[in-house]
Image (cartoon, rainbow, N blue to C red; front, side, top):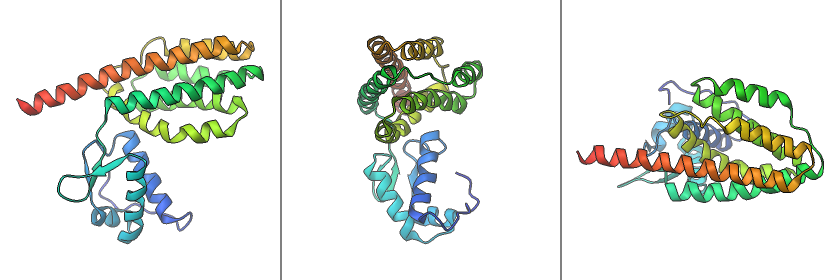
Length: 228
């Protein structure tokens, strides 16, 4: 985070604003796994009292983004391979429900989402790649007609953005990802719910396998380096 004070508006509630700022910083990697967070430092940076910072940190701890630090205080939660695999299991189930409902409605995914996603895929802009991927899945959730799906999965996406950012810094998004998105969108538009579900489950499984494998490699590399 920048050492300069961050200006916040008076509404909505300060706790919500601080929570959102810290959540974005953790999800995007500007606050790294294991980085220590102190109430005094954050209060100074946000130009607020310690109380809203304390409450925001409590919320982040409840949601799994910060954890108790050795000794005293909190730190950004370390990335955990098993936890991320479990998050992908939940995401896969919700994605399957979303595409089934969307296919039953014969929904059409905005082709601009696909066009922008393919364009971003050619870059090395990690955050742009993550946002394009999220935009596709949000389009599916909206097409389902059930707003509870997007609400239920939003927090999980923040966890996934953490690992996607960490992994994609050192390796490119797999080449087939937007072909997979295209196939899912076509199955939805054709009203083929079973095919859409099959495709989106395979898509989530492949993402889980590849990202957790790369994350395991990175964690092992860090451990080896620390022991050297």
